[in-house]
Amino acid sequence: MAEEVLLRMTGISKLFPGVQALDDVHLEVEAGTVHALMGENGAGKSTLMKVLAGIYRADSGQIELGGRTVTIPDSSTALANGIAMIHQELSPVPAMSVAENMYLGREPTNRLGLVDHRKMVLMAQAVFDRWSIAVNPKSVMKELSVAQMQMVEIAKAISTDARLIIMDEPTSAITEREVEHLHRMIGSLKASGVAVIYITHKMDEVFKISDFVTVFRDGKHVATLPASQLDRGKLISLMVGRELTQMFPKEHAEIGEVAMSVRDLTRKGVVEDISFDLRKGEILGLAGLMGAGRTEVLETLFGIHKADAGTIKINGKVVRVHAPADAIAAGMGLLTEDRKLTGIMGVLTVRDNMIVASLPTYSPGWVVQKGRIEAACTGQKDALAIKTPSLDQVIKNLSGGNQQKVLVSRWLLTLPDILMIDEPTRGIDVGAKSEIHRLMSGLAQQGKAILMVSSEMPEILGMSDRILVMAGGRITGELSRAEATQEKVLELATPMVDQSAA
Ligand SMILES: Nc1ncnc2c1ncn2[C@@H]1O[C@H](COP(=O)(O)OP(=O)(O)OP(=O)(O)O)[C@@H](O)[C@H]1O
Ligand SMILES: [Mg+2]
Image: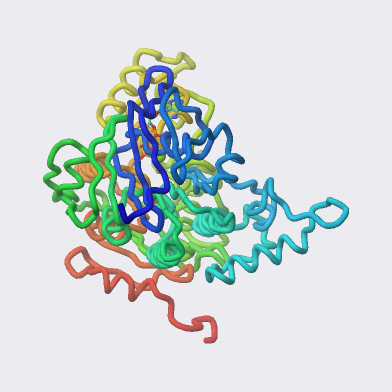
């Protein structure tokens, strides 16, 4: 055989209480290749990678690296074996600097054995320079955007000189431009003989960068094929076990009166003079590149941040929103972009996570109506096909995509008139994606008004009745569904050179 098998995993099984996460799976990866690991939410992708990275212990099975059998009881052993993992759920230490986060647990030391901060910053800077990453190593982690944190996480993995890098949905939080950047980085890693195992729910990426594709379904190995022998349809049917007929099931909805009217909303230095009307039955897409201010618009409307100026009218009446509770009372719901930091309450159950925003509805006169809660949550679990052994499961044990579905259901249960969603299907598999899109479409038909931020161009183009494009904290243009194209959106999203000069 000409090719060099770097990694061979065989007979790997892993049982969690109530879930056979992995059932006798195998995976072979050659040096200098990109191997995509595909499958629906909960298929077992992250679990297998965590076994490889020393985070989980498999119940059975064997791992060979470069022909030698190895045991990987912890993450430092994984690193010592040249295996680095970029995790699906970012876990930065918010109060520490970028450089400290990058070299956590492997800090350079001086002659006295103390951490050499100066050297650490220089080392981080060298990695950023080498890979053209625009982040200051001295910045405090919590001040970075989610996308920047993601780039730091990527840089961290690369800086370990690994021969195998696991990337678990590395592009779920970054926009097209950084995605291309990452793909170029992967190209040079490959050229230097590094193997990359790549997990993504974005179909286009798979065909762009991978050499081989392995598909898992329900904890089982379904197929491994060269990417050249697959196409989109074939891959999807291997993943979901059936054909998907419609990708963006946007139905016609009657567009009604103005539900929310925003005028001159400003948060100095962040968003400026945001004005728009959102109508009943309408899905209004908010497009733009990373840092354009889209999330900030939603968060300011929802009362997470204080606006410096501007008015919000709901159903023609001025509302004052000082805190999220005011927004919820006014009929708004917000599905946040970053489930780990602002959405998920990790140690609580699926049920509690679902019901938390609508508890008042289910406890009139202070009596908690357990039966109604049970029915409502079960209804959501079924409607969104949330994969969990029960509603009592602690949410952090769910796969990434299933956690996202729980958050979607949290806001659906509040029955908001105005639903603001930030990246609604980030990390969600193709089947569930079209499920969520169908739900959004259905909500619009019921007369709900939906404001959707998305970095996925097909989603913006496929689901929006109208698109507002933002750049540099301002709205730079508006496109109707009929006139919108990827080129037009990108043109409006790319800020002019030095707008501030005027
Ligand atoms: N620590 C845990 N405790 C209990 N169950 C778990 C744990 N981790 C994962 N699971 C379960 O194992 C199954 C596989 O999860 P895994 O995270 O590997 O899926 P995935 O393929 O990465 O999905 P996604 O695309 O949503 O990230 C899921 O049913 C999940 O709920
Ligand atoms: Mg996962």
